[in-house]
Length: 186
Length: 204
Image (cartoon, rainbow over all chains, first blue to last red):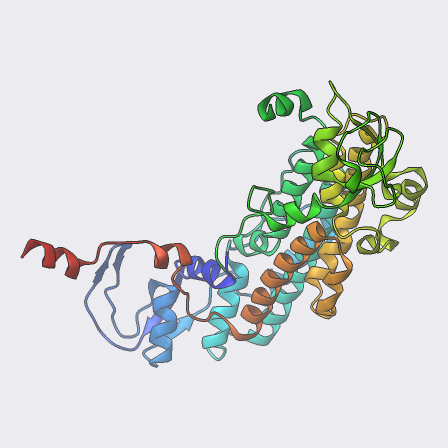
């Protein structure tokens, strides 16, 4: 998958905005949004929030977890834990990039949050690389990794699945019975 | 990026065809009448038994069949004891491409022969592949690497390197520039769907 496609999936997450206009409820396939009352917070998908923000029609209230203190705690836990810890959001990386990209002035401590999330991402990526390597070197046929987010899974595609395919090919090459091939040929 | 599959040999795969061209040294066991032209140095019309020849894998393999072996084969030196020790010492330090461009592919072919050394080839390939995977993955994920570095890898690893690198570049550009527009997947674009206009033409 393309990172853009993962981001597209992440755009379905809800975010709170404070609209500066009044409008009726909008009925969409995925559900109804609104109604919008100027000054009253309401929940909308990120794609709509980004669009409205670009038209200067709303103010984005950051996600609950977009708080420097909370994120530092999450980062410390991630650093000390041997395994992956649960992230505050399944699309933490894409949400941060989208929301901070379009509305850095609406979210307090935007720069700090950006840095911490990037650190978090780097820690998790290096952990992922180490565990992928350990998994390849071991003979095990499966591994269980909890709490990986879609964007992180997408990072090791297609390298890891392809490498496992090739490992499987090499593993099974000697066991192919030769006699059956000979009889097919004759 | 469209859906990409990993490499699998098939009838039309050029890499598979090329890898079966690699030479295996053979010793002729039975006198083969009329095949003297295969051995350039001999003048007799027949291929005498005991002659040593380098035959491509696709020819050597059927001639080495278990029931009527016309030839006996010898495993190429890159899959033998001395080279195996080099790989065990540090597989990452070896430029496998210099040994053979089709190191893994040819090895997989060789593992099918009935020969005492051939049983060890599979283990050798597996160990080499496992220990070199980290190297290939790191090269692919490190954008600072020279893109031509892939040429030092044998074909099988080169394919992994190139696909890994491609997806890495997409990720980097996403991180830098944010999402662009999503394109129609190739499969959908090529899907032969009957257009509404055509349907209406048929009805009238």
